[in-house]
View 1 (cartoon, rainbow, N blue to C red):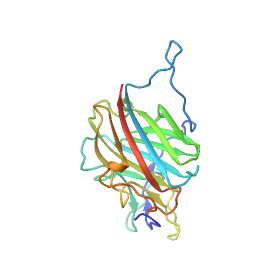
View 2: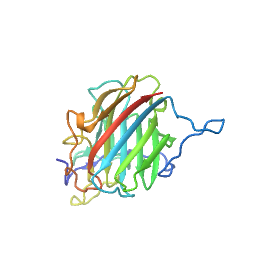
View 3: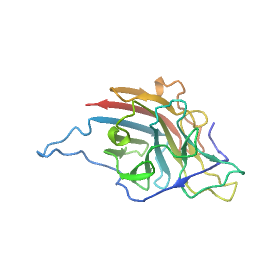
Length: 225
């Protein structure tokens, strides 16, 4: 269970604060019509128990190294571990570095980072009218042009700044019972769809400290046009 976690995030430096408003429009072709978008797309949907809070943080974390034995996970500080500068609270599970690709939503702005460098907004990104569903369409060529599989985790956090007060921990959620059950080895060389209902470790409700952080459902679709 991930309710009322007492740990704090370790985190890494956020390199920029630029981003894109909460809703992106469709791309237009040079002839004035609508383009179908990137040839290779990753469409990720995250569903929350309650309307998201603008000041909270919502991440799609992607590991591109092709090794399903490691993947993106939330990083928890311990009393013996120093806390580095504020930033991304996610690492590759067998290292101390952030995943190669991150989409971050906070204060109504979507940002994409590759190797910790801001590369702009996703191709499409929106939040549903009830504020519970986040849908992001990512250009897979921006993630990697060579990776055949990806490891993915969805992470939420109420803060990126660890508190000095142990009674005020950073609360968060991720996939799986401990937040560390990332989706391993998602193939991206052909179209396919993956969802919570068919997952070996389904994501359920009520395992986060706050419903605005509680991930209760997800889908991932690979679309090759």
